Image 1 (cartoon, helix red, strand yellow):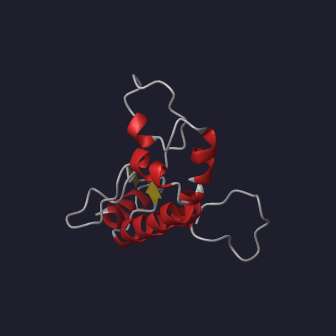
Image 2: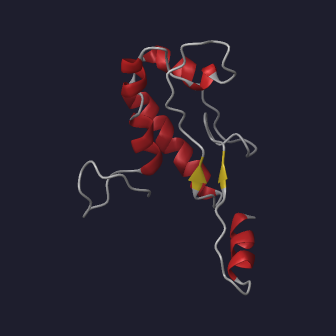
Length: 124
C-alpha cells in the first residue's frame, strides 16, 4: 500500500515524495499477527535497556517488512503528572530510567552507519 502511494506521488507533475509513518509505540499494532509489546510504562519497570533495544529491533523489522519507513516512536518523555493522557508512553517519572531506555532508538534505527561520526544523529 505505502509503496503504491509513494509511486503515485512521485509520478505527479511535481514529483513530491510522500512522508508516511505509523504510531508504533509498542510494536507494529496496525498489522494482523504483528508482535505487540507492553507499553513503555511497563518496560520502564524492567530497567533493562538491552530489552528495549531488542524490542526496537523487532518493531523496526516488522514495520520495514510492510514498506513503512517511519515510526512515531519512541516517546522519550518524563511524565510527572498522571493527568497527562499519555503517561503510559513514558518509561518512568525518573529521568535516569527514561535516559537508560533511550536504547530503543538504537534498536529502531540500527547501528551507526560505517562512515558516521559518533554522536551525530542519523536516520537509517
